[in-house]
Length: 441
Image (cartoon, helix red, strand yellow):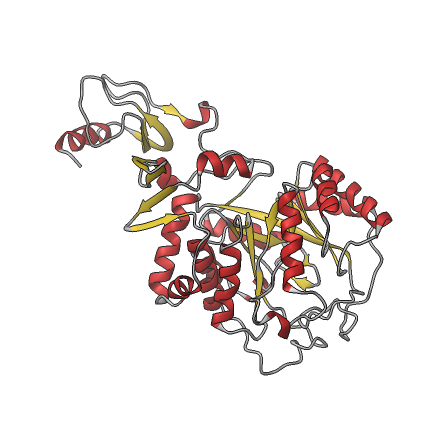
């Protein structure tokens, strides 16, 4: 920092201050070469610096602190593919050509170094204090014909889960209202079946659910098994925000877990979702007997899709007695370090993707969850139940957010711009038609 800048900052520090986020215009007669003409400071005087323009709070401006809500607009304008971001000695860019070897090298980085890199990349693209809260409701439980070895809803497993008919529209909307009152801003609906197929009456009611939840001001997500292109378009027209369809694990390990649906069929559903203009939610489950190489393989598939998923849920297996994996004592349990390592690697290779801490969260302490947030997770599932696995209650999550200083992401609003970006700590090099233009974000 220049001597002029230090002199100027001493002038600022001599005035009574209060904390806030403001735009500062330096006095016109004073040259401050090391600061941009519009600098963002964390300190503001109660008046104005002598000779300078008064500080103007961001709240009086047209919401520059949030990115566009439309993910396509956001990615094209606010975080485009053709830029490289740099902060704290790390660089990051949006890539679709990752090799498994590159991802494995990141994944196998010593834990402390991996966490530091992931936390830095996270702050290049996101505001680390904002975490999205989602609620998942099982609108059709049990009776699924699939043979997923982890799932308590399969007819092939003898578990506590009993098949129930699809919930009525009014019941679902009431649940959505309760979720909204508790602070959730995205409402996800899951149905236990292999595919939507020809379930015309059930689909009609689901479309009504989507319309009703959307009318409540919530973002709407659904996970209904395999769907075709027309069904994806109908869901989009009804107001669906995102569609979840997990890959679960690597292509190599997948046949050891599921045989009634192919990996390619899952990828086809993701393509239908993408073609309909819906946000893609796709992740996996840890604890299926997979190796570290399988975890790398899953991340490789996700990060080399035509476009990265808008959200990637990372689940820890909730072993249920009566399922093949729940009864397999040779399957190692998943610990917080496993979760953090996968989350951190996902954050680095898919930097503008929302990483969701999902099933299994109940088994981790507040400190362990904080480690996962520090690794780059910025979304959670909350509520009384996550499909058929317990999940922390709303009150516990409110307490956790207060303890960690987190705020929830509002529905239908773009994410907050990170503080480091606002303060000019993120250096962006934009590559346009072979010409590099460098500026400070």
